[in-house]
Image (cartoon, rainbow, N blue to C red):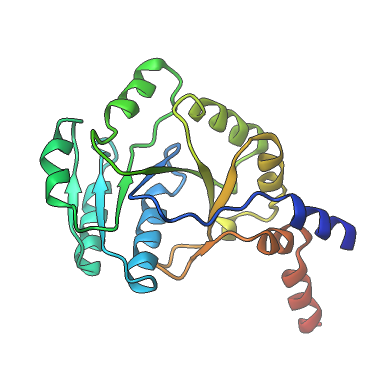
Length: 223
């Protein structure tokens, strides 16, 4: 176990890069994009004192826009709904004072070029820098995670966020994913609480998940 822990620590690609102006959240339906975006926005505002706007391009999911609008009101930050690429031209000139714009994209399968084209058409026309986060559920099977990543590679993403850590009993699929897909882990979603159930990824945390160190210690203490 010591050798395994050392190897995982040395070979796990982790990123903690928040410098970009735009943070785009993409991924399949039900992966937790919207809640993850809200958690990151909360962390940026409350812990890092950043000026943030929340933007939705998702007109397909029922209630998604309303959910984000409510949280934006709670956080006291601007909320905008984008329905076409031309909308960006009206939005961007009014947001130069903001540090970050967090953009929620519709959950798509990307099984055809039309859906890929839609996502590319919804990108902002002007921007300083963009970082795209692929959001995946840790309770998904290895094959489903890899298949999804390969479909999103055509669109492009910079890192991955794994959600639902509390719902999965095993987390080996996370390590299998990063061994086969050339990307970095950005963060983990642990539960449904905002913003508590969100943490930036570390190699140490992944070791703990894989070897169940904390879980085993709790069981030993109970016995």
